[in-house]
Image (cartoon, rainbow over all chains, first blue to last red; front, top):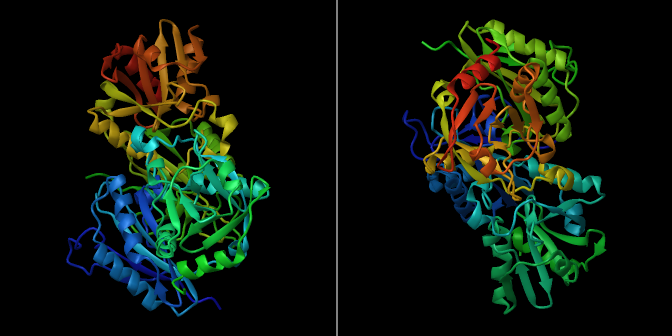
Length: 292
Length: 292
């Protein structure tokens, strides 16, 4: 039997609760906890992070919560209390049955309409089985409808904010499946490879590893930061640079990185083959799971 | 005291509930009703409509529910049972204390992760006080980041679907307030006026009334359909045609139409004045509230 998920509600996510109650507490996971008037529900108005936990150890909690706070700032949510959120993440992991891979989601919403107080919670559950994707996956490029200059020109389009408004990301993934692929590489209107709907692009050309610059409106990837730090220690070159899809195809390897699925190598981009280095992919998976 | 909102849960929104329970029932509004694993919450993955109710009479229920079903189709949700949803809307209105203006929201989500069964509800509450906006409002243009050809080129960006992923719409409205305005007119990357974040554009040039064609990726407006029908009866011309913001400024009147706020005339677009015809605006408000 799959162990039960754990839910921790965090009324103290942006400061001590007004009513003097505890900043977080474990709640009944299978019971309804949200009002239909929460702006997360009615407007997809909130921010989130997904943290991977491997053999009980969470990876990159600090960078994930820092990025959550960054996203909150981008959508004009109050500054977050990261110590409280970090303690809530620990409490969720502690309360969960030990499993090899756990997925912990941290969510902060704009709260119930009219209150101005964010709603926040941490949800821990057994990770999906991503092993197939870690072997390799077919990816298609899809236009994201935004130029690579969107951060400067149109910040209200929320480039680089990890919000709960992911309907387009989900629709893009369904489109990929319709095209016989497993995932998407979003492309800017000016023709640059950006990121996946829930992942960061990493491309290898010889000894040079490239990811998309945050200035192009992508999320600052926590996983790529971990891999870059390891590669740099070995004297390899890492770059933030815009690539064309053709440069991804002509690479020595390309991956979509994320905190639960870890490193998923691309076998094909728009049906054009890309070399897969199984050994390097496994090394990335070990690095990103903290098992290296 | 403001009358209490009414909540009707609709387990039969896409067909009779498997467990043989009623297709809809009134639930406790102030109590949590949603799981944190509902895809509305985690992904903004669902569709909605807002119906105005004036002196107890809902306006355009049929067109709103038809558009809800259209949105559901655009995001690959199951076909909706519009009779059940319509009966649930009636039940919510009947259960609410009589008030001059009621706002009824109908929401259908992709449901709890892994179940494949939509979650749906109808929520009725006293309308916000929109009277100030019906007098006139300052509007700014903001780039929406999508070309007017997006429906053909990139349907996965969900143009014209009224989804719960409205974080960008909300951020755009905050940007308008920062600029000293009250609302936004979204503009396509190729320079055409589109729609507001929660409203449809109507522009008058003499005896010709123009709205944005649905082919440009905007929502098919229920309010503009009502107004067009009335204008056509009087022999006036109505058109679906793309306009430049400059053509909106040079008009004899422009409005942003929606089901709760009704007809809000633009006094300014990007600080350039637009004539306001108070009498015609009042007539549109009467038409859209069914009080004409």
